[in-house]
Amino acid sequence: GTGPTLLSTLTVDFLVVSFFLMLGLLGFYPSMPLALVTAIFLGLSNISAHNWFHQSDKKAWRRFYFDLSLTSSRDWRVSHALSHHLYTNTYQDMEVSAFEPYGLSFLPIEKTAS
Image (spheres, rainbow, N blue to C red):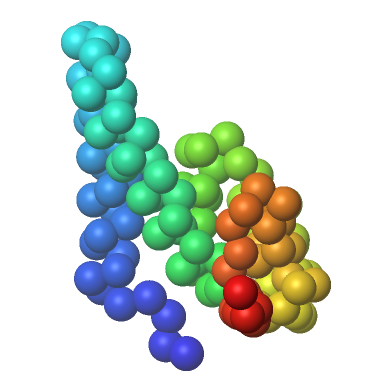
């Protein structure tokens, strides 16, 4: 592939800058609504950082945005490669099957006759 587009790059940078701005505001004006907006920006930044896990190390420094959520980008990159890229969207894919015990299934389920 060609890598992330300029729009994708600007979007993830905007999300991270917005997270830090909201975090600063939250320090001065603590409130639950502001904390929720800050958390949403952090979550979206974390999700967007996924695009850079697939790039070479020299141009993928934005993958470290993932570390803002206190999740190791190094560990997740290894786990993502070994689980999702070897067993894409199967029961062996931990990213798909990890939430199944909690009632969330991302795989098609056969309907049974009632």
